[in-house]
Image (cartoon, rainbow, N blue to C red; front, side, top):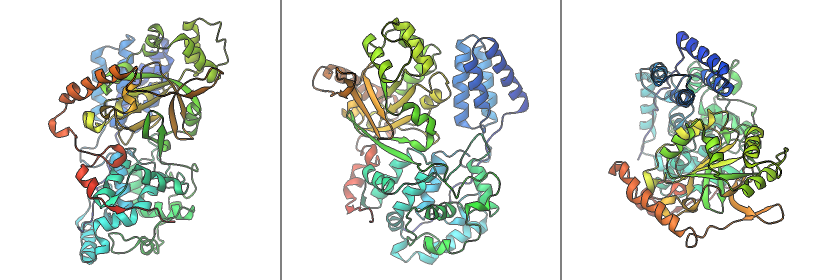
Length: 544
C-alpha cells in the first residue's frame, strides 16, 4: 500500500475568562481562611495551565474535595465545571494543544516518514495547495516498493522510537508503535522497542510546557512562520546531539531524511528566539518511556519524561505499602475522598510492624518504635516517608477493553497531599497527557492470571525507578528486604478465583460487546489481533 498522511491541525488551547478567574481567586482565599492551604495551592496551580480537558479533570478533583469540606455547594461545584468546560476547546475541531496521544501520534507518524512537511504541523486545516504538495509527491513514488507504507515503517522504526523518546511522547503510543511493526509484517515487541530505546541515550530536546505557553499550538505557529521545521528539526537536533538516526530511510516526499535535511533553511532549533519548544541543547540527558520489570509482572511502562528529576528522587529506592483496587471506578472514588489518608490510618490498612519497618527503611527521622500508630502514620505523611503503591487491576485489554485511565493519575497529580506519596500502577493504559508516577500496561494482566491479580492492600514493595524495577518484597530479618513470591496456587488461590469471577464474568458486561478484546495480544505485543501477530514473520534486529 502507498499512502501519505495529513494529520489534523492543532487547536489553540482555552483560557479562563477574567470573571471566572476572579471567582477562583476568591475561592482560593476562602480555602486558606478555612484552614485548607493545600486546596488553595492546588487551585492556583490548576489556574496556571492553558485550559484543556486534562486541566478540567484537575479542577474537578479540587472542587469535589472543597465540596466535601463544606466550602462550596454541589450546585456551585457544577456551575464552575460547566463554565470551565465551555471555555476549554476551540470550536473548529482538530487536535488539542497538549502533547497527548493525538500529537504524539503526529510526531510518531511523521518520524516514520509518512507525513509530508507541507501538512505536518498547522494551525488551520490545510489549504488545497498544501494538500496538493502531499498528493503530488505520492504519485511520484507510488510505483517504488521501497516507498510502500510497510517498507517505510520498517526502515524508519529506530527514527520513530528516538523521536518519540526525545519529544516526551505518550505512554500508550508504545503499543501503537509495536502494532505498526506487526502490521508491517515484522515480529516486534516491547523488548525490541526497549532495545532501540536503550541502545543509545536519547536526551530531552522538547521543552513543552502548558504553564509557559509552550504547547503544540505554539510549535505549530513556529512551524507555520518558518522558524523551525517540526520533526525535521527534531531529527536534525538529535543528530547534532550524537543520536544515530537512519538518514537514508525513505519518506513520503519521495526522498530520504538526508535529502530533506540538506536544505538547512529554518532547520535549526535556534531559529526560534523566544520561547522555543524544540531545543538544540538538552534539558536533561534522558527522556522517553522506560520499560520496567518486576517479580509480580513481566513488563510495565512509565513515562520517565513526564517525571521531574525531583519526583524521580522522591520515589527511587523507596519502600511502598500497597493499596489495591479492582477497577478504575473504585480508585477514582477513593482518590476523591478528602479523608482517604485518614481512612487508611483509621482502618489499620497496614500492619503496625510493616508501618514501622517502612519508616526505618525510608529514613524517617522522628521517633519510630515509641510513637503510637496514629502519631507515627501522621508524622510519616507530613515527612513524606509514607509511600503508597496504588494498584489498579482489571483494566487490561481482555478484562475491560483497556480504556483510557487518565483520571486517577490526574487526581493524584492535582492533590498536594497525595502526589509526594503515591505511585500508581495498573494493567490498564493512560491517556497521552498523563504525567507523573503512573506505571501502566502491566503484563500479564489480571484477567490472564498475572501477579497483579493476587496483590493485597498492605503488601510491601520496593520501587527502583532508575533500575527500572518494582518488586514485591518482605523483611529479611536483618533490617533489609528480600524478594517475595506470590504463589497463585497457594494461600491466595481463592482470592484470585473470586476476583476473576468479578473481572471476567461480571464486570466485562459493563462495556459494549464491540469493545471486548478476547483474541488479541497483550500490551507488550501491541494489542493486535493474534492473526496479525502470527503473520508477522519477518525478524527484527537492531542495527549495529
